[in-house]
Structures are given as structure tokens and as C-alpha cells.
Image: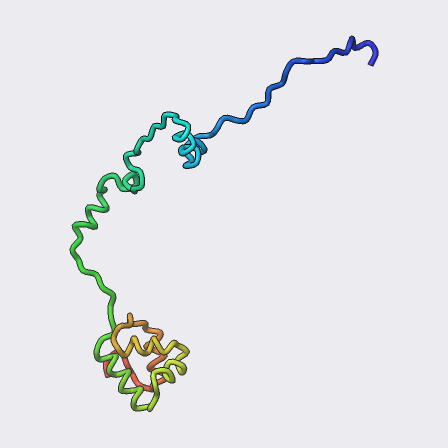
Length: 142
């Protein structure tokens, strides 16, 4: 190391500080309570849309107005009375329970219950399976 020059020591003090508290820690409940105990002045500001979803739906748009004005009553198609009676009659003629019929067509017993009570939404595949299993024509002209 010869030729570089005299070596000197740097004796200036080095100050290490904690980083300043972030905005999130300033709002922390513990910090706020500690500041209250110490007598510090605390400012609280209520945000206008705090806790609501008003920003997302600030005004009624064209689509929401159309939906509000819509008066058409929409409902799913249900199993007709003739079909549910025909399923019940054909099942009784074959002396099958709903569970046995459901097993024959690889469906749940609940499906058969829904068809016979008229609550099911008609599915042509299931009706076709029922026709094959029961050996009767359930849809179309008799």
C-alpha cells in the first residue's frame, strides 16, 4: 500500500435512526390511544363514502334504468301436467318406485320426484331416458 498516501481515520459520528412511521402505523389504534394518553392533538376526518359502495354505483346508468323499468315477469318452463301424470302412470304400471326408476335411467331419485311434482325444468335427454325405461311415449302426440 505504499504510494497511496497517508491513511487517515474518519472520526465523524454516524447517526442511525429508525425510519419515520408510515401512514398506516400512524392510524393504528394502539398508536392513537398512546397519543391520546400523552395529550397529543389528534385529528379525525370522516370520509364521505367510507363504508359504502357509492363510488361503484354513483349514479343510475342507462342499463340500470332499463332494468328498473322492465316489467316482464320471467320464469323457467316447468314440466306440464300431462307429462308428470304420464310419468307417474307409466311408473305405477311397471310397479317401480321413484328410486328404482331413477337407478334405471342413471339419475338421482330427486330428479324423478321433481318431474312427478312438476317442479323440474324439462330436459329432453332425461325425458328420452324415461321413455326408454318405461316403454311409453311421453312427449309429442300420443
